[in-house]
Length: 431
Ligand SMILES: Cc1cc2nc3c(=O)[nH]c(=O)nc-3n(C[C@H](O)[C@H](O)[C@H](O)COP(=O)(O)OP(=O)(O)OC[C@H]3O[C@@H](n4cnc5c(N)ncnc54)[C@H](O)[C@@H]3O)c2cc1C
Picture 1 (cartoon, protein in one colour):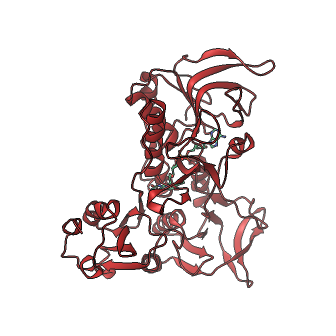
Picture 2: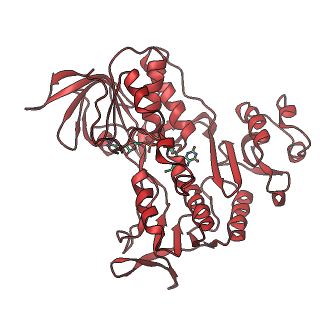
Picture 3: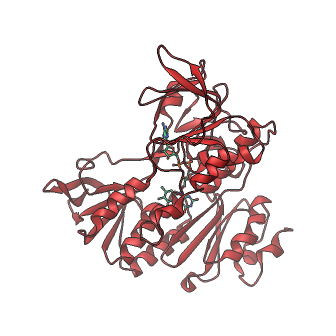
């Protein structure tokens, strides 16, 4: 594990700020050393930005990839070292100073400074806020018990893995991607897994009904007990640990480990307290700029008007969005203002199923299934007012690659032609 504070380059100038505290100043200070923060630093250097850069993160590790946490890191198929976004040497060579184990608790936009939980002050020329989100917690009794886990950080997953040996029965609360991915890994380990979803289908927030039903059936076929309309009342306790999940209605689902995957809350309190516009995330313009001077925000925490959502303000939680917003911010800081308009894409691995999504299906009015779901190789094309807005491709990488142009061009296509798997999607691009 990386030491708590890693100064790879003493490039920060000493400045005086705050009553008796001396702090360092960076031309670009990035708060949050995850996907977006790391990519912002990488893109700035790629664009020949020569000023000082520091990346401050509250976790003890160098920036690492989060998607494997619910996939091959949980299943022990990938060691943590292989999750690092870049090795330590990369940051050193590019003079990006990485300060780990520091949580920024306040921002002073007038002084161009931030304060860490230990009281240290850091000055900035520009601040990039890239803090992602914290796992949403249950609010019921027992949510704090030993055995109840989130899946957001390496520490969360290490802690859970340490308890798996003594757990035969696991309850996963939340049938979103993270919950389902964890359920798939745990079922493959031979655990008795129950997925508890409050709505009437899994993936309801992100996918059309046909895909939800397909994944429900897949999980059931792998022995997972998928419960829909299952509303959690509390976590039951035995000997100071979680012992089960009590549902509204009285049933108790036995579980020695409870995995909570019910979304995130954007980590933006210090920025909002400093006066930034926002609420569920911090509001940014097309270039990633917040309402505060010289402060940008990117990644999961940034509420932006996305052209693929009809220009509505949304937050996206994906590696693509983190990386592309970071690139937009790096451009903005190096004099190349280009609006953020990247096509959203996403993936999820469950069992031997690789789902790849492009576009946003929210608000679609027609969903066309292409291929036979029973073959476990098919796509769903989503249309809105006759135009393609998104695709979900299951074990169909060709559709994902070719369908992208349909989404980017919002191509009008006849459902009968889309439905025919013998018609390559690229042949429909011209409309
Ligand atoms: C288990 C899991 C599986 C996923 N699978 C996929 C997938 O398959 N495909 C996909 O596209 N996306 C996936 N995602 C989503 C993807 O990982 C996120 O969208 C992405 O990490 C967002 O990047 P970010 O930089 O905005 O936030 P993060 O990567 O969360 O980084 C934010 C960092 O900021 C730190 N931080 C927060 N507040 C402060 C503070 N005040 N001071 C200092 N540091 C702070 C956090 O500790 C964290 O390290 C997954 C996420 C998880 C958790």
